[in-house]
Amino acid sequence: MKRRKWVAATAAVAVSGAFALVGGVSGGTAGAAGSVRGVTSNSITVAGVSQQTQFPGTDIETGAKAAFAAVNAKGGVAGRQIKYAESADDGGAVSSDLSTVQRLVEQDQVFAIVPVLDPYLDESGPYLKQQQVPFFGWGIDTAYCNNPYAFGFTGCIVPPPSTPTTGTTWGALVNAYFKAHGSPNGAKGKTAAVISEDNATGKQGAVVIQAQVKRAGFKAVYVQSTLPPVPPGDYSPFINAMLTSNGGKAPDAIFLTTSVPNTLKLAVALPQAGYKGVLTNAVLYDPRATSILKNNFAFTQFDVPADTTNPAMQQIVANLKAIGGPNVVITQGMLSAYFSADAFVKVLQKVGKNLTPQTFAAAMKNFTYSIPGVVGPTVYPEAQTEGSPCGTLVGSDGTTFSISVKYSCYQDFNYKTGKNLKF
Image (cartoon, rainbow, N blue to C red; front, side, top):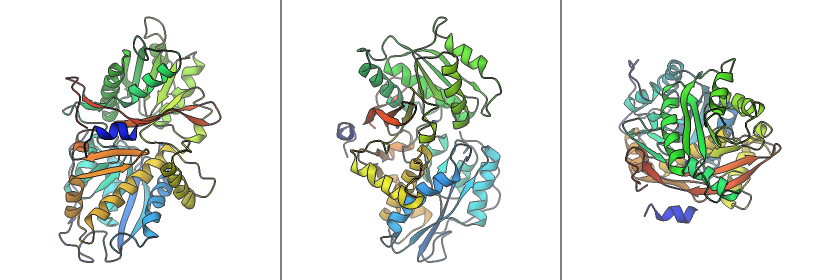
């Protein structure tokens, strides 16, 4: 694939640490029934993990099962049905995430963790790599980078500081919004604030989003990763600092690079404090949040159900309704789980009958995940160090979401040198 051609054709947040391994589990070396953890002659067992205060288990279970049901109904993959064991809650902490993942691997003997939706993989990411356990999810942690057993359906979007890459996506989408709403120069001459949380993912997220907003043309007047991960009782110091960061005035745009609990609070508190600029976040595409996000915007790294003109997106909606019921609320977490599971299926299909952790990792080395016009393309091996620079900007009128800037793909770049990357 000529990677730049898909940009026109398809016309993207969130650190590894040391740990002591507890016990060893053989990944297996052969595809015979019983010799590979979680694999029999007629089944493959997986489980999902999320921080359920952000991504409820019911959402990720619906998303994963919808993707698996579609292939299971056709006989599975190489004669094997995919069994989804559970949606585990990692408790929103590094230590409990590790113990949860260890239980799934060492006791429940799952072949893979699908999906993984949380930013607390500091210890579980290296553990899964050492134990040769594939894991698929939304790449909002550095564990998705430079790991042959990790697959982010949007690639490595929060790289470690040693890998200074990011996409122009979020900044470019807001720039396009300004151009379409009375500002011919877009972000040029405008100001932006970026706030994130005081943890490893938040600190690195602030770095990459700052680079994105600058690349779009904004002047970054406030960039802080001092917000407590657990919502504080008093947001006023952060709000006051942001609303006076532009020479005593509010910035034109505020990028909330924060978890769901903090985003919910800030999305309400900032307008209440008088903020009237563009307020945008990367986690709250959820129809239940439309009133909270009135006149503001969610950034998603994929197309959304509001795109009724896209048959591929509407097929995904039908698949989700088949599992969750006709009135299921389709959320960002649910869609992320669906894409994670769908990508896992595509790699399984590439592997075929001889399924081991090693053959699975080999198949991932040169693999492209894409649903044209919906998500990706995410091209490996490049996606071990880069993210897929694609996305949608979705606005709320207080009642419903609608698409403010359609799904498009943009550009990855080195934020230290400014040089564009191939992917």
